[in-house]
Length: 256
Image 1: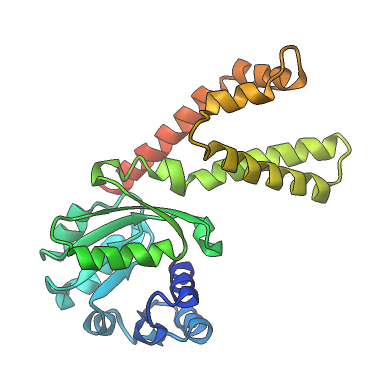
Image 2: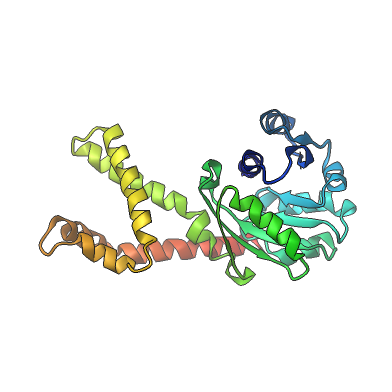
């Protein structure tokens, strides 16, 4: 994800590559980013902190405590931290660093890798507007950005961050069924992808609700209603709701 953000920034010229520093415990990852994006590689976390005014914490929630412990000796209240970890609150970061650092919490998704990301952001009260706009523009270079209150940041994971996996699972199920019915996999996948793209564009039309769009496809006594009857019989909407709530619950567990 860090690589995707950097590539988006560099590709759009949002921020000079020469002023971007990266550190990873795996030197090969640092070198790969350095060669691909023309950025700088720091020798240590401490050096990274000393070089940068804005620090992205692009690590898994399970590794956060370890990273914050390593960062803590070098921090000061002028450094802005940007977190992309699920479930990790700004309060946890501030408390762990024992410093009143400004913090922006973000939740991007993997389509950011191709410049089609959907990122949610929230911030602590002491984040300067200028810095917040800069970080917002960095993520905007890789897709769309929505600003939320932090109280919604765990729940939004189920909406934009984990949800690509739901869509891929649905697409896989459609693909498998199409192949069973004799349609070539590459042909079916092309049709499914275009249908998903077109359906997403239809959902963006302000005058049409999801219910309106469902009715547009569903002729009385027709094929679509037969398919929908099976979804309803198996409580499709309830299953989606339960899955999203399980996602949010896990985010809350990771933040404890």
